[in-house]
Amino acid sequence: MAELDEQFEAAVAASTSLPNKPDQATLLKIYALFKQAKEGDVSGKRPGFTNPVGRAKYDARSSLKGMSSEDAKQQYVDLIDSLK
Image (cartoon, rainbow, N blue to C red; front, side, top):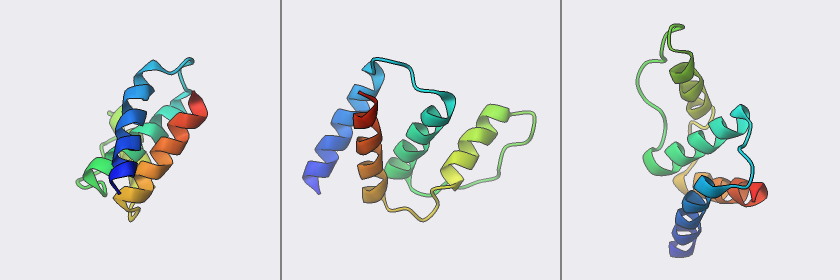
């Protein structure tokens, strides 16, 4: 478990210096996995149509509902490693 936490923190640091900026769909997945790992399932109301960014982020997080923190961390690490 501690090893996964270390890998996750290293991936978070590495995510700021990727060689190429990921596309929007990948950025949303990175965001959603990070939030799922740190905060768990999304809560609250889905933002309205006047907030398309907030709505996209909410939907990305909502798609991961029920995923464990450990699974989210591992997928985050794997995704960042694949982008290096």
